[in-house]
Length: 183
Image 1 (cartoon, one colour):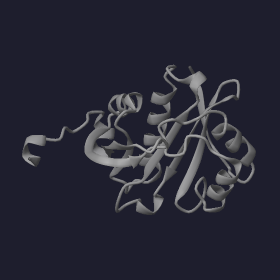
Image 2 (spheres, rainbow, N blue to C red):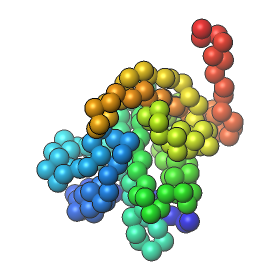
Image 3 (spheres, rainbow, N blue to C red):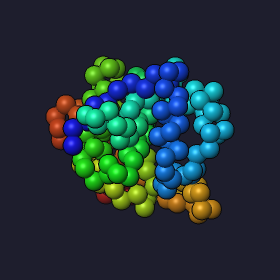
């Protein structure tokens, strides 16, 4: 499925963001059902847009919102690693949109900030689709965090951290970690 990624100018599309995020439960998040009050608090704190955050819509060619991405921790550019959040709405899952969005946001980070050496993201251990998407997108598993992700159900889940290096992005080949040396 063809998609277009567009910057979400938060001040002019607040309703669009809220409608998308409230359209369904996001089960792999600590808060799967988002109230308007909670979203307003996030908006005021610069969660969607600010010096350290940028948000983007993933739109179909019919201008339907298929997903949303948020790039954050931009204060780490050049000396750390920015991170991202991606949400694809259920009618559009399994259509290759996640792969296109991951490629787009990775290209965006490395093309926008030439000094940036790495880009990373985390997911819950039980989010198998996201784990596969990381690997398919050239990201490498770097960290396993035991009981680090508080679920909405009161369960504390394990989480995983993946990253991609600029050199791997350029070559198209992920650099494997020699886990035997880490032991």
